[in-house]
Length: 419
Ligand code: HEM
Image (cartoon, rainbow, N blue to C red; front, side, top):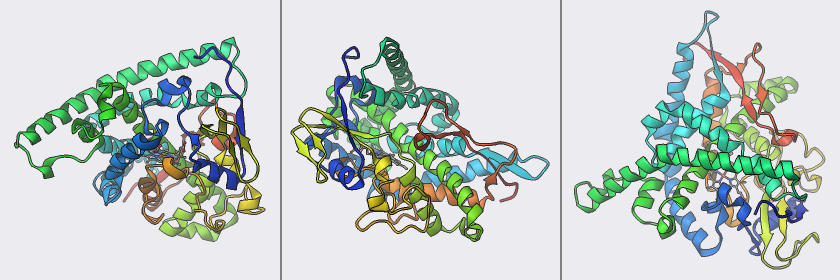
């Protein structure tokens, strides 16, 4: 119910406590009915056995060589194609121009569409329309904190949330009609032919909608439309926006770093250096304002923070990553030479921790940090000669007040006209 006062959030900001809370069995992800239109039916909003089962299913798409295959078969060719297109548009000054944000959205959408089982060719044709719909969906997380915010919303605030929810519903319906329903119907037909012996195992795709068509998780079918529709949209959202942000922010942090450390510019195509830069960027630019959890019983964290049963906690990973007790006196600074605290990954809790830790981690950073999508994108761009366009400054998306949570709307760069 939008009209009721929001419950007070308990802030968790210390690195050790956020890490502990993310793994705590009594801090659940299941939220209130207000968040249902946003994330209901997604893996991030189910707990316990149903969650373990869904994750096992999803893991099949990225583990056991899945993420490398997706990178080799889809992402690399898409990057090469888009770079060639930018070179072909090069102007008389011999420089190609591209916007890193649009470039990354394009190629990553293609990758995630393949994981889901959406038609890639259609996706490419309709991609502008998809971006428009996605922008409607992307605008929504800003309201998430308001939905669970410390203060009750005033009448204006309530009206804006209602309006955003209505737009979200329309955008999800449009998306579902245009892409999800036809793709699922095509997968069901494939499954029928497979069961009739007309096509073999090796011809069956490995994607989310094929799993749904194979009835691999009855929860998806319980309501014939809702869960799969939310899950697909959430996948597209989670699988693109965070990585796009990471590429643009890393390029931006590196520009600043190279001003004071010019010799490191030589390392711009070195995967190990880029990986360290990506980890630092992920540490400093949190994907979400907070991960929200609700206590199913009274919980007391190790530094004394109490979360009584039924109350919500905001686990502030962004603030935890600036905790000097864990990350040292220069915790605020971007430093690709940083040694992370014992037991922590270089990216800290950027992918969460515990049962709901990011499913896309192997895609984003690979098996060992150097072979993931984000490093591949950055390396390909630097190999193509990427440098900031001096005549076209980067633009931040409007409407996000907190500097650490801002994302780029455009990040224009120059590349060489020849490969
Ligand atoms: C830089 C890239 C990424 C970052 C920083 C990121 C961050 C996160 C975080 C912090 C969570 C945990 C949220 C919580 O505990 O409440 C999460 C969960 C999730 N992420 Fe990512 N993510 C990234 C890339 C991806 C990709 C590429 C995909 C899929 C293609 C993906 C899909 C998911 C899913 C499905 C979940 C929910 C997992 C569950 O609840 O079991 N993410 N992500």
